[in-house]
Length: 132
View 1 (cartoon, rainbow, N blue to C red):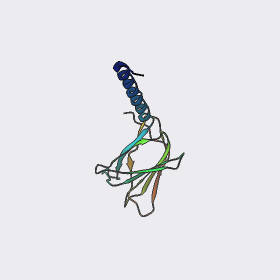
View 2 (view 1 turned 90 degrees about the vertical axis):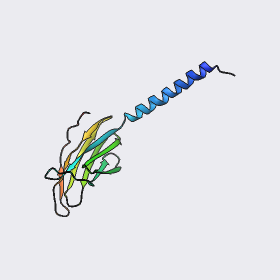
View 3 (view 1 turned 120 degrees about the horizontal axis):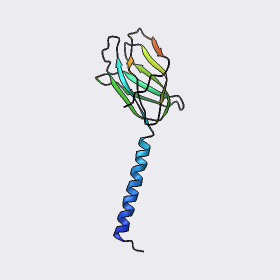
View 4 (view 1 turned 60 degrees about the horizontal axis):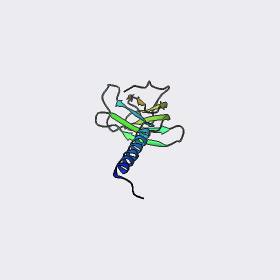
């Protein structure tokens, strides 16, 4: 059976549009967590390790703050998370429950305190989401 060139072009366009719309739907089913890590004086803290743990699955993901103290964790599945920030010479900073929504962006600016070994600062509650 032979197909006309017009039919094949139309079929190719339909397949391409289907694949593009499937990819767009997948991209919208994730969330992003970002923020800036600073010390008590407001100076940025580069090299801090930020660990994000899913409360539903226990899966952890880590990132490190850049030279400006900024960090980003894109493509997270929607749900509830715990965030922990660690840096040498500073107290551990923990947010017990962050809720990430589909296509959402939550910003957590962690102000970490100077500390002796083993000291932890725990934050209760959920910070407000910032719409981009």
